[in-house]
Length: 505
Image (tube, rainbow, N blue to C red; front, side, top):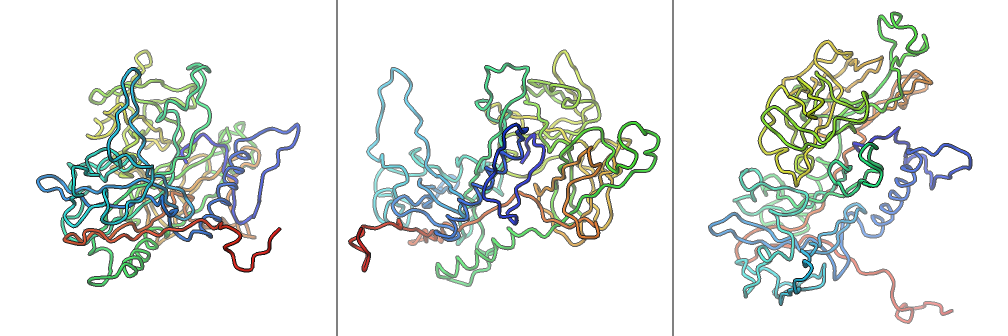
């Protein structure tokens, strides 16, 4: 979560069931956020226990897939509305209506249906063998449901061959679910404008992101002409391999050399030499093994962002340059140009370096022009995110990579700054977005990190991002275009007279 947090304290293994506020005490963001996390954990565990790994309510089971052949255009999929739970996480596939401007009579179509209604096979709205619904109603073109190409958080690009649906049948259509943080930089409606522009934004939001994606049949590992259960089993194996992290890391603090040269910054015996409390975040930028992986780090949990007003070559005009010298931009800073599509796709671009800052014009000049496709559409709310590893000569000793991030080195302690050190355990495989976070505290002169009885830091898997998967459909083309792989459930409650042996009050 890229948010301005003091620390994250929720630990499922402690089995806390609630947070109790006490009178006369300081109220902290960590306490309030832990209560949210406890409630969410309990609700999702209950839903997963009752529903199973995935499933939707009968009569409103979402994410029914219809295959729409492209003929002279690209193939498409219709994603019908309704609700679906994946590992207890609610996903809502209903497409909001466009709305009616004031003074304009509302329009209706003969195909309007309750949100989330499932159409049985062969009925109007269910695609037949050739993708024709038997009339003029085409779910991929009538705008009543989401489609593969316009689904809200996948940002598929028809110009990218890798985004297109597989040309070879069969292939699997699956649901990927994960969560990310959204701040006022991406959703301006979060900001309370009555507070004025001089004050920072208030609370952030956690967004559930669902993406309907294809998986080629050759990558699934299912047998020839598989049954629906065989497809589900093969997909479960594939999903487990992609969901389970293999990378581990650890933080520690060691009193840096030459720290006696600055004796007044902090207590002499403190290993953390920073002047302020920080939440250090280390995040994988480019994935893969240690040979290819890179990482970036922030002392502010990656929360320092600057909304972009315009791009002009290497110059970036910003809506603001920050509230103080801790949260501003300076020459030499590393920045990442991002927007909603870039964040949702999870495909990292090069990190750029600030070369010059124009304070009166609220502009910065970068060392290179940002790549195409990111930051140029105002509707996607572009922003610059600051990372705190700098060019050689800064306080850290990690080596820079050609993409502006740091080269990942396993099996050795990597100096970040002010005594903060990082360890990557050998043999890991890294995914873009994997992150670890550690609070550094001036009162103790160290970082808060799990440790063994002898004080050695313990290896930990990434704190996120957790991805969850569910199979939706097996697309084979021909007369049997789609095999539905979803699960459904009915309500638990029933009339008491229908329950054999039930006692009556």
